[in-house]
Image (cartoon, rainbow, N blue to C red; front, side, top):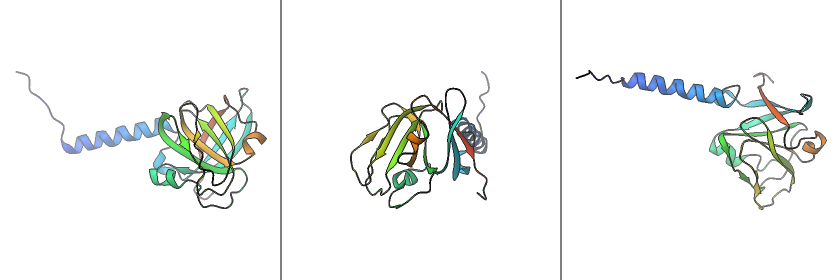
Length: 164
């Protein structure tokens, strides 16, 4: 009869932590726990940079539920990047959001799949990603048009310096 081997609790915990780290770095170029702000660069099909946005991240359910609610302004070329663990349909509304926004939906292959332009402040109408997306970048209304952001554009996420 072959001897059976079991892993100690410590070994299982160590392997679990290692697996979580591998999964987190596969989703983003940096680990989600370290992200507070990220630089989002949008690139056209010829590899030309269209725009850059400094984005706060919304990773936890609490951060995502709060989003940009109750803010009255946002600097140009800044935004909020909602980070999810997989591509899925996402739905937003503008209740308690006072800034008109463009919502840029990006899939796990870092491709823009939909752009919802000029979401109206305090509007409770549901806004759909229309296609599965993993990341949602909210920016000031009109900036997606100014930057020629449309489905098919690629996104790149880079960690910003801590002192930025």
